[in-house]
Every structure is written in structure tokens, then in C-alpha cells.
Image 1 (cartoon, one colour):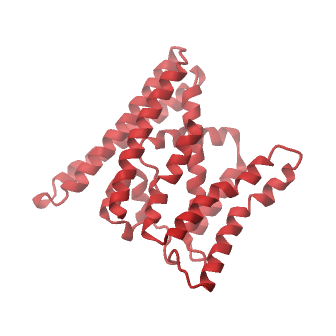
Image 2: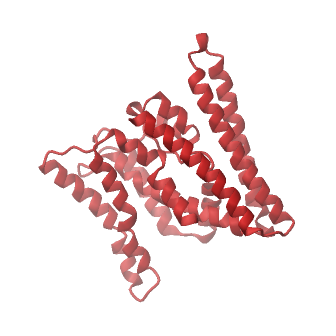
Image 3: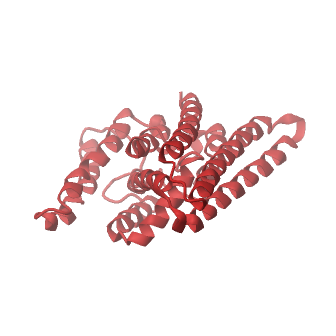
Length: 279
């Protein structure tokens, strides 16, 4: 179940759907990246584990080869001028409002609202387990996405690597929420508090848009209200898990139902709106 939602966040997340403004082959390239990491994952713990590092470079090689081949056939799937900037950070906390503003002027790099709860827990688990390889892939992809074209590769394509890492962390974070016990009350409470703060921030921003002259900001205000409700839904879900952990009640099925419902509603509504914005 957690793996399913990790794939859903990657495949139907704002970043992947935002590539609908480019050539369809760009989306195909991003869809192959998770599969190209499989050989490295499957050899990481066997007798061929020394091959994990070379095999982990397969996605990087595939991206470079794709763009090199594209130049020869004069297929410019993604502009080499598309790169990350500070203005794109708004899509992390308000993906729907940024999509409303226009995907042609921004890059979608967020993960909707409720999945951020899983990401927070996933990052905490990543730090505790000290998975240096994942951190390195995330850092390299982010750096390449922020600078100019390297080997004629569009910078924004490199960000698919950090997005994939975060999607996997969201899945692991969901599993962590399901299995959390009494000793995990600190991270759970912190996550619930952060989700609550995001809900408050989103609703306060919505209030400012509703106060715009002649109702010009009403559409953005309504989208921010939806975002605030989704953040609040995530905060309530984590809070319920926190209280079940505090009283020593695992209730794995209850936790799964709560997380599945919250994630499914958020992903469905968000993906539907972004697809309508792209088309």
C-alpha cells in the first residue's frame, strides 16, 4: 500500500503532471527513471553489492543519452532554459494556486498537501538510518536542476531524481506512521504541529486574496482554502496516530484507513485540478 502511494505521488504528482506542457517523450523519460534504479537496488545487499554504485548511474546515463540523441533528430522535448528558481518554491506549499497562476511561468516541484506528512516522517527516518546514497542522489539532482544545461540536458529534468527520492520517502513515511509506537511520539507530534502551521499559513494567505480589489483574487483564495483544509486533514490524521501511539494502541488497520483516505482525496483532487490546468 505504501509503495502504491509512493508511485502515485511520483507518477501523478505536480512535477510529473507539470511536464504535460512539454513534449510527451519527456514524460516517458521521467517514467523510466524509477525502473533504471531497480538494478542498483536489487544488487545492493547480495554478493554483487559492489555493483550497486555503478548501476546507480544508469538513470544519469539514460538522461544524458536521451538528450544527446534528441539533438541529432532535432527533437527538443524540454527547453534547456527550464530550471529551478526561488519562485518555484511556492508550489511546495501551495501547488494548486501555482497551477492556477500558469504552468508556463513556473515549475511544479511540490507533493500536494497530505503527502508532506509522510515526507516529514520519511526524512526523519532517512536521517536516523543514515542512508548516504539517497542523500547524495538528492543533492546531485537538486544542484544540476538549479544551474545551466549540462551536456545539453534541460536542468529541470534532473530534478526528477530528487522528486523520486522524496516520493520513496513519502512511502516510507507512511509505513513509519502505520508502525509508529510510544517511542515515536516526538516525531509524530512535530509532524502534526507542522501540518497545522501549514494549514494556518494557507488560510491566512487565502484571507489576503479574498481582500483583493473587485474579487480578483477570489479564485486563488478558494484554492488556498482547499489547501488549508487538506493540511488540516493531514494534521488530524497524524494527531489520531499520535494519540493511538501514546496509549499503546497499534491499530494498524485504523491507521491505514485514515492515511489511505486522506492521501487518496488529496491526490485525486490535486491531480484533477492540475490536469485541467495543463490541458
